Picture 1: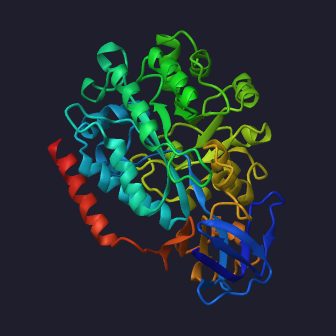
Picture 2: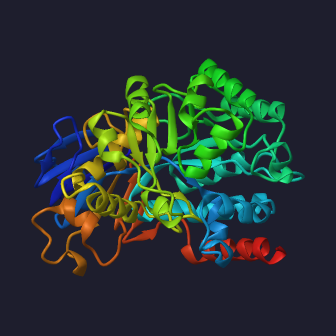
Picture 3: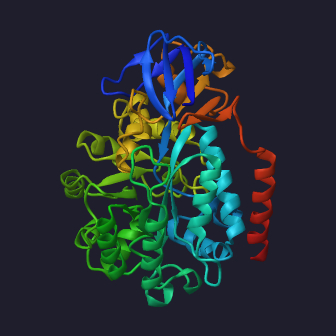
Length: 454
């Protein structure tokens, strides 16, 4: 039985039921599960021991919405002044050149960035399946996540409504409904593990109301509930989406999704910016969740979600970095800082706190994914956490409140040590299992190929 002991932790933020923050405690992880959180735990000779006397320790962060493949088109100059719809229209033809090699390279980079920023669980929404390419792109993601050691919730995205039928995406990245549903079932049967401490759980995720048919939405929800998997999509991200839904569907986005069977505790939406008062009540009543993406929402000028109100109404809210081409990074600590400052500016000084943001990024994300075994440090919880060296230059003068310091201070928004399922994946700020320069070189090669073809 493999055991890892963190001894004499300087400051431990547990996010447990009592939200305890402890000094001088130790914690023991056995076979990937936290078994003890106590003042003094005596190490045994065969255990791996980490002296945590100079470290702040936090639960592993949970990223609830991403598009890994977009790593290859970050900061592309052609879309830097574009809002969502023109941004998508310009990028769709580039993404249509995505290959399996590109999927592997981008997944490695995205997960590397996430791990290095304290993220231990990630959900990715992959919806681009270029015609003529290998259709098993999700399989490549799953295998890559397994190699990286990250807890993974791959979302089988889809687009079935092309621009020739009134949708937004071009025909070359649109699939038939039967093809989508067949592959969704295949992925569930092949990879979905609903057990506690699972490393892989499948999500079904038609892209958006403007890129899929009503039939696909309805059938996807039925299939997901038949097999006990969760549903995810983009919703209420921009005014353009509101206009599209009211023009083409005769109703607002949430009303449409509710009619399609897309509300409930097993559903979460990315963004959720433009919900009206009565729509927040629907989310609260049904337990439908929201993945908050503050950096992307600012960069694309999409708006500011009503997150403080959602939290007051107990609407499930998690944090997310969104696509790497609309962020343009995969850093959860930066996302946390952005969430804190954005809401203080927009909704008022008392609307958000560092601890509320940390809760969104841990327990909130775990709630969206249906993972009660994640998001906190307590006996029986998964052994997922990250550590920050309090002696960094950027934390000088910030020792009185490590939680606030994590979000607002620091010369580098990076984890010094990240642990997933009791395994050390980042040590001294560097990946343990992979040479970062190799990951960079391969991703750059795939990026140049995609962009230069255009």
